[in-house]
Length: 305
Image 1 (cartoon, one colour):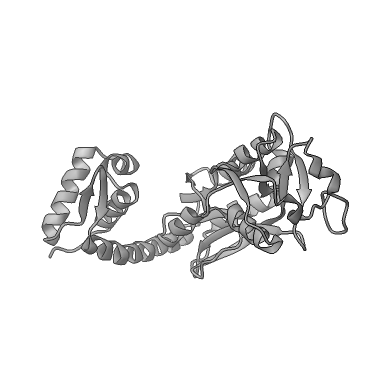
Image 2: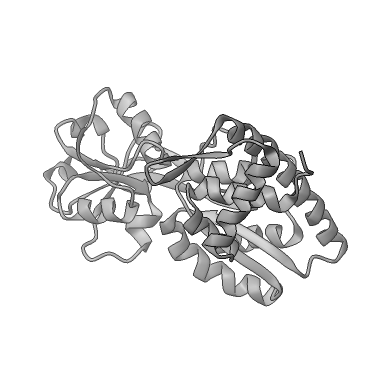
């Protein structure tokens, strides 16, 4: 078996992530035929297939899974090594990969990228818009330098720095009669409502892997009922917008209904005993100190929030 090169691992990782040649080739800036030929040559060198086709998807074989698992560790060590060299070269050049949920990017990027680029004009920025579970995975695989997402982080292989602290709120239509049962309560930013009173309401929820839904599940358990779900959708902004129209109640960070642009504004309620607070954090792989420019980006984000 020939020696494995770093390029072999990078190409394999891209194909596995996209489950195909087309998007992987776009990411790697090479042609599809060139990438197909490279993969065929690599499989010939190794003497075993790395992928199998299932419909239109390219799925790792067992050997491919083992190869990639070990390969990812090599890529991480290589990445760490090159980052250390970057530190020695004063860190004025390099690449910073950042990830965030789509809605976070709406407010985060305009506030941070212009400031960061003035400080580090020669650092290339790569952005990934993913849900929290995908960001966790990309950080572990070494694809992301920083991921911005909400706690809790159920992953011992990720370190993080707190950026801001936000309340999880319940949004509903401004004419919802249940608002009359909310009242001002010490320690609450918004009128507080006992979630148990919402037992007969419908809820618009995100998907189970999203942090907001995980927090909502805890609140429903605390309130002692299973919600009636009118719709599941990935976009937090859409859930909040629909709640303003009376389609159902929606959970979100207070930032979304309060600050982001909407047509009709929903009514915002505090919930939970005590109210649920959520940290927005910048996460990175455990044991790997952020580079100078990664830490600078984190500091700029903290100033914005």
